[in-house]
Amino acid sequence: MPEANKIAIQDFSFYYDSCRALWNVNLCIRSKEIFTVFGPARSGKTTLLKSLNRLTDLIFGANHTGTVHLDETDIYGPNVDLTRLRRRIGMVFDLPTPLPMSIFDNITYGPRLSLTNRKSRLHEIVEKALRSAVLWEEVKDRLNTSALRLSGGQQQRLCIARVLALEPEVLLLDEPCSGLDPISTASIEETLFELKKTYTIILVPHNIQQASRVADRAGFFLNGELVEEGPAYQVFTKPRDKRTEDYVTGRFG
Image 1: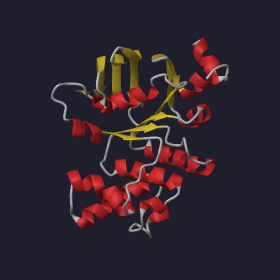
Image 2: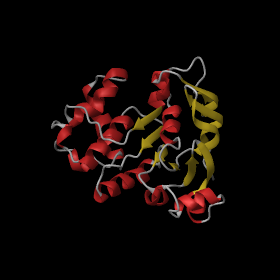
Image 3: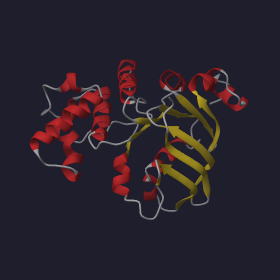
């Protein structure tokens, strides 16, 4: 039985002052799938991700038209609690950004602020988040050591675990493997397959090959327009639009 839609984007356009970054996007993303958003630079991919948890609110002059629904909630509605929204839709950026503190304190930083200070509960949160990010076995004996001593791939999985500690429903991942070696990249991709059992994942991949490896469905963006979306095997092997075919076969981009 197919999963229900988790996010519904309708007639959504986004502007930085008068510069249009997204144009009339209509897209539904299902619960518990990996949806990859791919395309050349400056095609609107990161803007789309930031729009989904309203990080774009922090940009002076930014504005939008259209709607975005998370389940039944219009995320741009006047009564939306932004803190709660960003807890429901967590984002991990391309460069790992561990805090200069222990692995344990990195994971518990958010929960201490908003959920609990009880030590036993914090230990449960840390283990669950690290297991979900497929990092627990590698760090369980050194939780009190600095997170800055982890490898690049481990740091990125730690950043994913830090978001998971807040128990989100959707994960936004903006090129999480861009600076990583092939082994670390494989570890992140393995993590994604585990995470999609529980979470909806929207991924801007590092390259076309990664998009085709991990996606359940995919959308090709070009100059702020959603050119084509569908099942990954169809988009990458039998695209309907010639612009998609030209991009995935390397004729441009």
